[in-house]
Image 1 (cartoon, protein in one colour):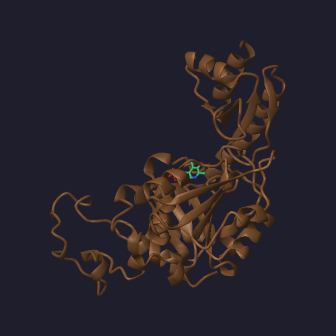
Image 2 (image 1 turned 90 degrees about the vertical axis):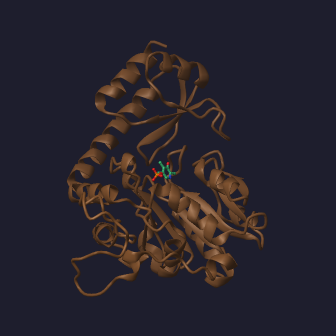
Image 3 (image 1 turned 30 degrees about the vertical axis):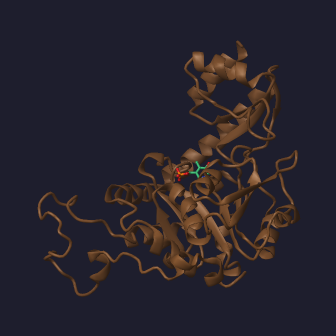
Amino acid sequence: MKPLQQLTRPNIWSLAPYSSARNEYSGKAAHVFLDANENPYNTPLNRYPDPLQWELKKSISQLKGVAVENIFLGNGSDEAIDLPFRCFCQPGKDNVVAIEPTYGMYKVCADINDVEYRPVQLDENFLIKADKLLAACDEHTKLIWLCSPNNPTGNNLEREEIVKVIDGFEGIVIVDEAYSDFSRQPSLRHELGRHPNLVVLNTMSKAWGCAAIRLGMAFASKDIIDLFNKVKYPYNVNLLTQQKAQEALAAKFDVEKWIGMLLQERSRLMAAFRDLPICEQVYPSDANFFLARMTDAQGIYDYLVERGIIVRNRTRVQLCKNCLRVTIGTRSENNELMGALRQY
Ligand SMILES: *Cc1c(COP(=O)(O)O)cnc(C)c1O
């Protein structure tokens, strides 16, 4: 890895971040707060939330087995996807490399930040060799984007190849593990000590059933986390989100139960798809969705919409011609989908 200062945009490296009232005060226990121009009435909504979310991070630290100083929390993963561009990539000059197909937000953020996006195609099994990704890099490549389990394909990338990318690249490698709670592969967040250039993303939007509260996380070295914290909006995670996330973490047995049910339903639904005459291939999945190649994705998609059932039509995505991406629902939702498909 290049020294972090060399990877970081000069304006970000020298940035003096906004210092909020709550940031500057850290002393004895206080009870009169006249420092932030807040309204003294309407507690607790009148007070600015903790800008660094210490209490919530302590809970997440315990659950995820990652030290608090290695955790960044954001307004969904979306924020944790945008920040590496803003911290590391000089608009109009630097570039990033990513697998293709994958989650659409990496390219959107690249475009917004005026950073060249270099997609590298997966093979026919939706896998990739490290050498192919590294060959797409040049001296202006700051980031490599990986997603495992990958969206929309559903499969894990090979661990050995991911590690080769991390070890073989001078810049930052971001591995989006939004679906890792459904996967048999252990998370890379436990390997942070060995890889100073690794950022692992996670979210409460999928297995945790909390897409509405917008809480995403990044795990990385303290130096990278400090950069993210310097650039983020001061109060990026609001009080209600911090409270709801704590409640969700306290009920983690619900989550384990949901994951168990969804994995069982996934097997059942994938088997049912394989038996459909209109389904040509069901791709392996380590996520709470799977990709299926159909005889006529557009026709089937439109037919399902007519019946009030929405799946994701991925037919226009690279390597995904005639593919539908199906999220695992409740048993009765899945049955309704299968009933409709059998009558197509
Ligand atoms: C759904 C998803 C996310 C979640 O994004 P949030 O902003 O946290 O809701 C992140 N990455 C991938 C690959 C996803 O599919």
